[in-house]
Image (cartoon, rainbow over all chains, first blue to last red; front, top):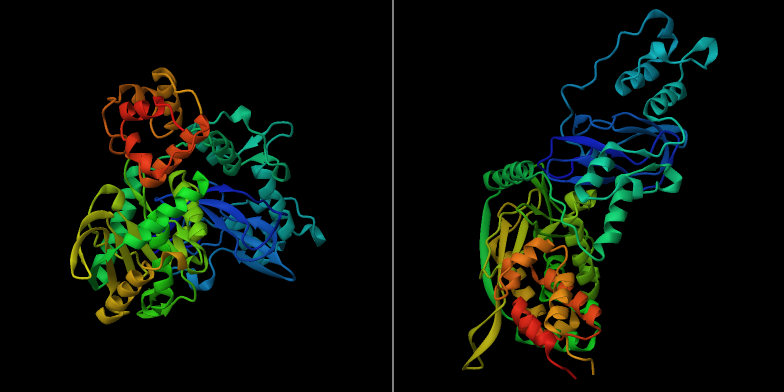
Length: 426
Length: 85
């Protein structure tokens, strides 16, 4: 069970997208896990063949618990978080080890352990090995048999069924993904997505659980992180004029919002400010080698998610705009990826749409900085000794004093301001 | 030159473009003079989607300078009802 965010201690497997015998590649989505905040698609960290699924759908297990076993070449690997990502080792394993009767003691200790962890009763498994020995493969087959239904019926995972109900998708209208022979959440989402092209559906998460998760994380941030705050007012005259001109000449779907420029400027400035871009882990700062920009997205009906735009500094403003739209859609349809919760190296919150002038945000642990933008409003501003009316935005920085000092933060904000004076370069 | 829309055509185009941001019942209850962005809590991304759909439906490009005309259902219907270039 990967730690999908600093606040996560346990997770529930909602759905498996692979089964024993399947070949998986690094980056494949193998399972959907519920973290209280959202249902997250878990990507596989390595390639190999699934030997067995250890944690059945519906089980809630601590972070660090192996979810499945992967055969990667000659050796065996556990699917789950890499050592770095693991939380503290769970003190108790939520499985009761069945006392195996004498005749199945022929199974090797690893096989017995595997069976126990998978909740398979070895006395019910036919042994195909030497002297009727129960092998690893026998246990894997038993697990597979346990989850399969009679042929001829279309299978649907319980999570997919629940999601279909929530999204108002008729199960009878779905066809399983061919290779998987069962309907999974992604099939339901694909159906909802096809419909959403005419009518976007807002999928609401469990509001109370989300409130608790946000509360726990923000309380931790305020308890552990010595925040310092800086703010500056940026003249967006040039940027707004450039956007207006750009948007007049492109098809409507390619229009840019000011947010795209703000994100790009922030990402470029963060790349030049390594002390603000990374994670605070185990009493020390680990700078990140790329800028993965978290973007705070408010959900209808309350709640907040921060999907991540990977390698934001390397993307054009147009690409960032597309990424931002995709990120907002992921957050609002409840289809976040595990990278959305773990990869962010710095976060941007933009409350401009709500009309506020500035936001002094709370840092998202284990990150060390959060950038806030308020509304872009026309206000009096002195330009070359004359008073004019200009579109202004207040940019703020909340930063972790353990990782950086005010001078670093000040240079960072000044750089954002300077970059926004040359929008054509962004 | 596209023929101007009738009031009813404009209303149905607006409702279609707002589908998903509010239910049909909510749209019916919305006061025609209420600010759409505020009433439906549309952020700038949502508003862009709304404009995109409206343009596509009507086969008419809506510039950013015209966004102010789309503030309420009433003003939007007026705007869409006008003959345009």
